[in-house]
Image (cartoon, rainbow, N blue to C red):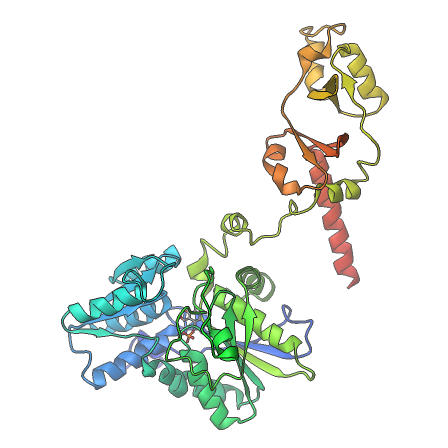
Amino acid sequence: MLMKGALENVLDAIGDTPIIKLQSVASHVDSEIYVKLEAMNPGGSVKERIGKYILEKAIERGELKPGGTIIEGTSGNTGVGLAMFAAVHGYKCIFVLADKQSKEKIDNLRAFGAKVIVCPTNVPAEDPKSYYSVSAGLAKTIPNSYFVSQYDNPFNAETHYYTTAPEIYAQTGGEFDAFVAGVGTGGTISGCGKYFKEKMPEVRIVGVDIEGSILAHYHKTGEVCEAKPYVLEGIGEDILPDNVHFDIIDEFVMTADKESFLMTRKLLTDEGLYVGGSCGAAVVGAIRYAEGLKTPQRILTLLPDSGNRYASKIFNDDWMRDNGYLDSSFNVMIKDVLETLGKGQEKLQTIDDTATVREAIAALKKYSISQLPVYHADALVGVVSENQLLRPVFEGDLDLGETISVALQNNYRVIDANHMLNEVTDALLREDIVIVTAGDDIVDILTNSDILNFVSQKQTYGKRRAARS
Ligand SMILES: Cc1ncc(COP(=O)(O)O)c(C=O)c1O
């Protein structure tokens, strides 16, 4: 007999995930937003529910036989759900993934002992190299195999109709006005949506789609548009899966990669929720839906997975910055930097290359500046700076009567004030001098210390503004 308090196996730990009220990321809307935290499943995602349910059905119907091979094209989470079932009940697994999936997901599946085949992302579904085609093809050639096919297997949506939705209904007593969920295969929204509409005819079922996917556009127009690449994993499609029951979905809200990733990070820093990118998208979608309401509602959204699988991407500053998802202090026009610093008002002092070192030092002193652009006739030929003159003059290597052309520095970049600061990030990091022009005139020089000054002024201003609001 099973010990008191214990479960028979890990599959029995799937489900019964908590629902949590968002405290701060949606504080500007009057509606209340609640999240169902599917990361609390033993493998970290909602997809364990379908892995278990679909395979139990397949065994019941004699489609998956002892020692058989489970095959699926999966973005990873479904793979974990299936692999977990296979581990407990002794089946083999082959998973086919698109190459945009995170390394963590691929490693995780291989760690379960599954065979993982990686296919190119940006090919149409009907291309023989696509992960849809490859997984379907394998299922035809491998004997005693079961192709899960989560896009069109009706047991996917049925899983949510018989497990996720009744669980939510029992937890909440149906005390919510809208259910918001990201749509990938469609299983979650179609299964939950059907159940909720039967129990609560007034409930709004809201799908979340991502820019580049074809689903929301199809729902609105009945037309299949061209899919465009996007980076978010888990939601959006370039096909119309049978499991998306468009008639159950009342409306779609759109999200985009950057805002979804930034919200994912905010869910961790501001709410303590370590969840994946499609969760950020779901919350952005729920807030967008709330912003469009005339009277406040209780909104429940499902957060499909854990943040663990995105450590090298969404939670990695370098990846976020390299892909342009992190707003940086350098995304600003140079003229705005000068304005903030109170610089660039007048034409900058320059000096001719025939001047002596003594004259250059006198000019630096007279105008209380640290660098002087040096001209030959009308052309800028270099810069002299206090720092660079000091040591050779002190050590006697440079005579005060010599012309400054022997002491010129050429570690400078010239840039117009209408350009962005991020164009000279590299130069500043190398401690080069940045000469700012407006038309033909040199208006100022920017150095690393100016940038530090600018960043600290901006942050102080930002904090003051936050303190006021
Ligand atoms: C991380 C993640 N979020 C959301 C979804 C979408 O859920 P569904 O396929 O039930 O529409 C998926 C499905 O693959 C997913 O893996």
